[in-house]
Image (cartoon, rainbow, N blue to C red; front, top):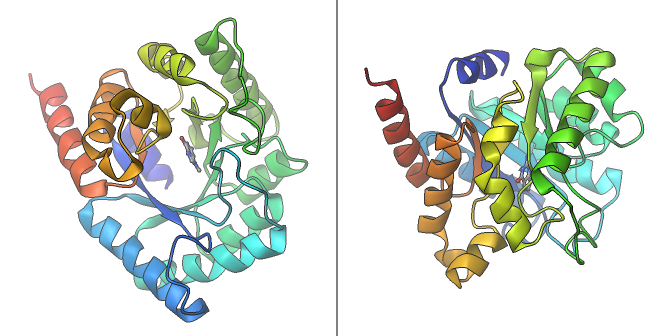
Length: 274
Ligand code: 9MG
């Protein structure tokens, strides 16, 4: 994972494929079937060009209810173990809970993706101790209520200030700079205008000297712009990834790996031309 982040610093992009292992995501024919289906999806995404598979056992969608630590561990650990045994793709764990972070890293994950930017008690210390890269994402509020009238005076300034402060706290606790990725958190406590403004000004976040990850794939901001349901947002998602690349983002958390990979390969080739 550290090598991948070094490559990103020297201008390559990387794709993080989304693997949700919440009960609604895969067939409910029992635990074995669920793990098998999740593994197949991970292998498919790797074949399509994913560098990282992001395994998450708790929904972070607006309105989502939290799940217990035990439940989350039971969902993610068997899947991470199966991927680790059957593939060399890198694995990140999408969680905000230190106990889940530990269990996931022990099972074979090598990065923590935290939409809560390691603000839970013990999360920063846990990641410093584990010695793995972390993605710090901005979110205003919590998933259950975050879309209820979020307000900002200067959305980009606030997001940027928050990410710099969380990175400072992490470095002070012993997480090295090169293990930190930042993410503006599109759709997390931001309405359409705020998301669009933040996107337009994404360069400001990309100038903060950490690799920037973006997650826009199929999100409701695209649904609002396009007036399309979630299964008709592929073109919008790929267009957004290309725009984010042009503004300096290099890590892309996506559902549609193959299409995004092709589009970003073109960006990279043009960017690297003399
Ligand atoms: C888990 N998750 C859902 N959306 C996300 C986003 O935009 N960024 C990151 N880092 N994680 C996300």
